[in-house]
Every structure is written in structure tokens, then in C-alpha cells.
Length: 286
Image (cartoon, rainbow, N blue to C red; front, side, top):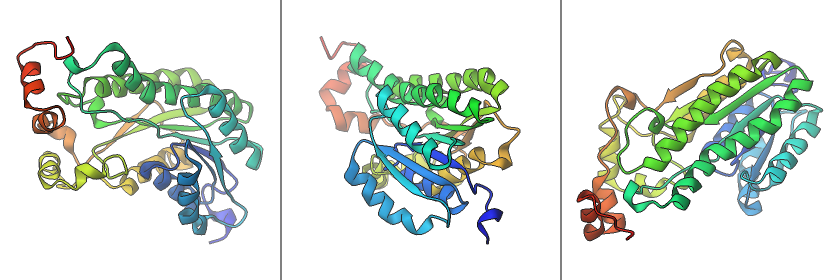
């Protein structure tokens, strides 16, 4: 296939959290279709490891660039956007993958731990959208894709900060999509279920945990990074040119059922005595 025939030929993309499982899978999907990709993450060594794996996917005329930085630091995000735009002279695609959360009951949070998860999931996306928008507006628009979670829709007991953060992220996606539509900037999200990454690998290794999650998914398995990347690639590219303000569930059908019972994991993490106090409505932090 010639470079001109590739749907993302000549386009430049930034992926934050680019050394992670979902971020690197998204990079692979964009590179295969001709985009130049800039990866941002905090650890240079991790970025270089991912780049070595992705380099064979770089199409003629395109490039893969690394930019070390923190997605929660405005200056680092602005630097990454500048680096990505310099590759082709414009910025076409941003994928904000930074996020995450802990299994932690409400009564085991304080205001700092709660707001840390809000910042990790919402501030990281806000900074990308806020500072990518003027660049995209100057050159005729672009596509921004955020990573949400099925926890934004399902009730996940013992994940109060994470569910709050992802629900807030989806509200932000809708608001940003409306405001930025006048500049032909599309803002969307994908909503993964539990997906295999470096951060979640321990859960995948526990047969009982895998079973609890998989049995709530009609398609009977947990996610792989490539499952999520396929949705991101659609929302990033020309095929979705009439789509904005949406969040697509990519989670094996879990939202047709319910969230898994994670009480045994809470007890294992914090101990029987602490969890018993939580269940009794006592304050374990007092």
C-alpha cells in the first residue's frame, strides 16, 4: 500500500501515557495507518523500550518521537504538544490515556487520596484538551480521544474516587466537544472494561479475580490493549468525522450486567479487621 493511500498519512498524533499498554497499542494502530506519533511518559527507559517494539510499524515518510514528561504538569504537556506539532507542522490527533485508580473504600479515603485520583484521571485529560485546542483550531481541527472506564456507568463498590473521576471525565468530554465543535475539533472517549496492562497484570494472574470479572461479561473474557486501541483508532480517524461528544463502551458487554463483587479483594488488601470496620460504618482512619 502506498503512503498516500494510508488513511492517516501526513497526520501527527500525540499520545500521553505512551509507555503503557493501552497507550502503546494506540500508537501501533495509528502508526500502521501512516500517522507520525509522539509518545509522552515520565520514564525515558520505558518509552525507549516501547519505541524499539513499535519502530518496525513506522511507515515511510512518518516518524515515531519520544518526549519525556509528566501528564499532570502543564509545561510538560505543552512541550509534548509542541514536539508533536513540529513533526508535520500541525497537530491532528491527541490520545489522552493517563489515568487509573485504587481499590479503596470511601471510608479509607481522605481528601488528599480522593482528589489525587480525580487529578490523575481528569486533570491529565484537561491539560491535553486545553492546550491542544488552540493548535488544532489554527489548522482546521482535529480529533481528541480520552480513556474513560466502564466504572463511569456501572456502580463499582469500593472504587468511589475512580468512578467519580471517570464520570467527571465523561462530562468533560461532552462539554469540551460542544465548545470546540466550532473549530472542527472532535472530542470523544472510549470506555474500557478491565484490560490487561502493566498496572492490572496482577489481577489477570489471579484465577478467582479473572472469573469474577469475566462472568459479568457476556463475551466471556477480559480486555486486551488492542481491543481498546481499535476503538481509539476509529475515533481518531476520518471514519468518525461525524462523531463527537461520545463515549464508546469496549468492555465485553459488562454494562449489560453488573460490576463484579470485589469485596474479597478489599479484605485481602486492607485486612479483615479494617474491612469489618468499613462494613460496620466505623471510621478506620480515626
